[in-house]
Amino acid sequence: MGLPIGVGGFPAGIAGPPSGGFGGGPPIGIGGPALGIGNGIGRIGLPPGVQRARSSLSHLSQIPGQAEQALSHLRDEVGRPKDPVLLSRALAHDGQGHEIVRGELIAVSPNRADLAVARRLHFTILRRHRLSALGLLSVTLRVPRNMSAISALALLRRTDPSGNFDYSSIYNPSGDGQGPGGPTSRLAVLPAANVTLGMIDGGIGTHHPALAGSRISVRSFAGDGASPPTRHGTAIASLLIGRGRGFSGYLPGASLYAADVFGGAADGGSASDIARALNWLAANNIAVTNISLSGPPNELLAAAVKAFTDTGHVLVAAAGNNGPAAPPNYPAAYPGVICVTSVDASRRFQLDANRNHCGFAALGVHVRAARFPRGYASFTGTSYAAPVVTARFGRLMPQPDLPDVLTIRSKLMRTARHITATNGTLFYLVAAQVASRGSTAN
Image (cartoon, rainbow, N blue to C red; front, side):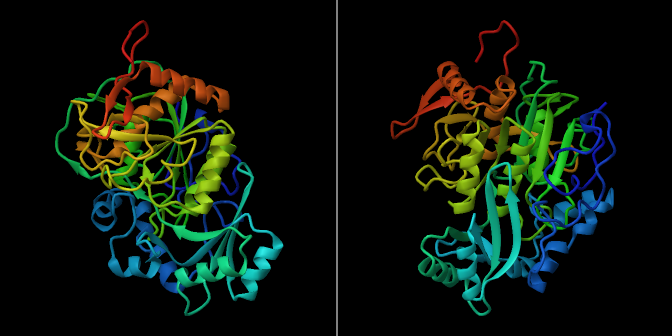
């Protein structure tokens, strides 16, 4: 019997699933956990406009049927409101044009002297999150009145050069939307009942036929604690563990710990949201995690990813869709992360797929996956290539272990087909089909 899933999150803290676990415990309640340091939700002290941006539309996740129709029109593919007024109040841009949370900066594991400097410069502490499983502390600072985040970060770094400060960077899905049709799904035939995967993405439509009955534990790290279902999160989850009539994901029957880092908030998908998601997955001993999101480098994200991978957890990340000559995206480009780019069924590279700092490739063009709220569609993007490699690692690696990561990575490189980009870079193409026992297919 699978875990009953509601729209919401686990109780406050990072202690793992509610009583009963995957075996039929109480449903995850609508509305999510209460505010608490380290619980990953319930942001406080935000400007009124940002508070409204966070709470707007959240009630729709609590209205079955109405949510399915309204969410697709009012939210983007990861659940953020499309309202330009809400977005402008919640988001700004850094000096490189990347989206950031308006009026916020992040201090990475600051000491008392760092925080004293920030207070003296009229910064206000908004939130503290102790990421115990990663050995980090994240402190969110409100920028002084009438100062941009760009000026504020420059001031902090100049005044306290020993501190570690950065923007609250925003990360976005690495997919190009959806269309009708698509190739027949490749059946994954290896048993996966004892496999548990992690996923950092948007909310999941758990009532979709491809996911109904699946063992999915959801926790939201943004917004008001609810986890509105999203198109992107539903598609990625279906590729990882989905199973339905005429459809199969790559590891059907596996369990999934799904971290929603958007939560329907206009400023969802921040570096802080992702860092807390990684902490939750590490605390629950999840060996392999898929993240089909990409964005700029960030000090907090870099520290969280390093702590995660240094302790033997695997993070498989989509390369992004900015083009083959574009600068690398993150977290895919961080050392220790398994970066995946996208090819089509003829092993030709997706035209706009990033390839810098990437060594693995997989099918990500016209991939058939669950379409929220119902049916299936063809999806394209490096977002949809990453689950192939996640499933392969997940099948071979039940527990976090750094030596095993290196061994399994080498094994996949040996058995994968080799394809070469026009610049001569070698990629290891991991096949979408998971081989049956006794098969020689890779």
